[in-house]
Image 1 (tube, rainbow, N blue to C red):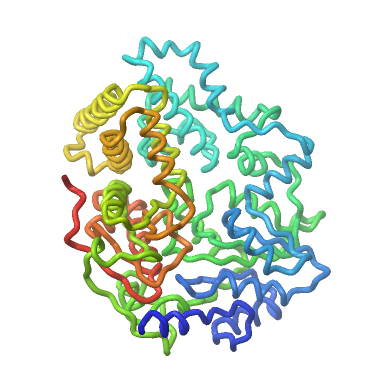
Image 2 (image 1 turned 30 degrees about the vertical axis):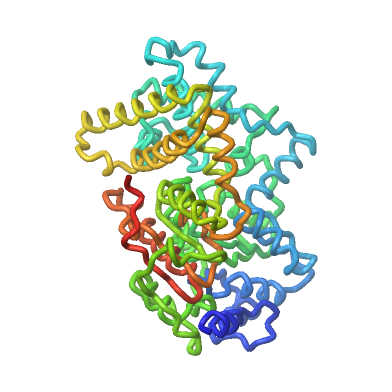
Amino acid sequence: MITKIGAKLLHRKFDTMTNKPTEEQERIFLFVKKRPENILIKAYAGAGKTTTIVEAVKLLPKDKNIMFLAFNKHIQEELKTKLPEHVRCYTTYGLGTAAIKRKYGDKIHFDEFKIDKIILAKSKNWDLHDEFKSDEEILLYQDSIKKLVNLCRLTLTLKPEFVPYVAERYDINISKPKDVKRVLKVLDEATSDRKSFDYTDMIYLPAVDNGIWMFPQDYVFVDEVQDLNRCQIKIIEKVLKKDRVSGKLTGRLITVGDFFQGIYGFNAADEKSFEWFEKFPNTKTLPLSVSFRCSQNVIKKAQEIVPDIKALPDAPDGEVRDGDVLTEAQSGDFVLCRTTMPLVKLFFEFLTQRKKAIIKGSDIGIQLIDLIGKINNLPKLVNFWENELAEFRKELKSSGVINPREHSGYVTLEDKVTTLLFLAGLSDSVEDLKSKIRTIFTDEIQGICLSTVHKIKGLEANRVFIVRPDLLPMQNTKSWQYIQEKNLEYVAYTRAKLELIFDRNWTDES
């Protein structure tokens, strides 16, 4: 009964504006149409932000250049069906790509291994076999160099004195002066190479190269501003129209975001991006606080973290309770966890019950396969990663970290490695292991959807289970990481439309 009635009541997002807009929406529309200020819409989870800004776009003159910057390709494709035809819709990566093609030609050479090739070529002069014990350790070092090069690009960290800070922030073991020099040499070559382009180039080069023209716009709409990196912010600055003589900003910026849904700091998103848009010149911040998604009791739970979020006055009561995921979970439910390993064990538990389930995130599968690398023997694979974790623990201990779980880099790696080794124990060969990984981790949601909180953002279900709630928020993290851990908790709660169920008894320890 609760599901049918509740679902009907909570499906009243103003997709076509056939219902009367809320007071908050009306105020936003008034500001967009009548006022000159830039606008930041502070939109909480399930508050109908996309619908609101789509309707806001329709209020602007059709003879103006208007651009909508979506957070990802999926959202972009969805928006194209809703926005007026005269509105350009890109992701920031898509916009950067268009700008690069305009400068260098439509048939640019895309090479996702551009950085790998540069590092490989330079490694010939680095004497790495004198520094490391095995080829596998060399590969890990090269991978660390690559990660740091990409993070430096995404954070616009271009000076040598700041590179160690980026490495420390993201728990990359690169700190020696020679390591920093190597990173900067790879970065310089990658920047100067305009014969091939990788994915990061698509926003990095337009951000740093003023010779790449950025299609100046009268109005720029930007979604999910809390998750933007420094390159993306720079591109948004450049795409706003300016007076040709004075250089004064004439384009208008209308942005939407929720600071409390900022969870991608690990991937170079700037935790101060929301603040940057708040402080953008002549900006008015307007709230969008009523959630059309969640029931009353789910909102009460979310208010423990974000007090300002509100439920619809006539939203169903819903339910927040403890429960048993193994006996209760059914097709269509979400099962969420902070880490991957518990989800893998649950997957096989559901398999024995003949319940269809998937683990969301094909990219997680890719990361696990990357850990296998060129190792083609299961015992060798297990031995290598067990030793690597042991060495990591030793390094942390020597640097003063007694408990390795106080180090976020170790926690992340341990989760991936234990997942990989668990699956290795169920496999007959490395190829069988890879096949299992590709089958289990997918983006096609079927049956019960098992997911980390990061992977489920933007989606919703009538019932959401949270297993290992003790991992939310993860403890012993850096201050910026802890803020994002609390945000993860909020994101997890607000995926539930009707029921939020905590399984406090299930354990993945065995």
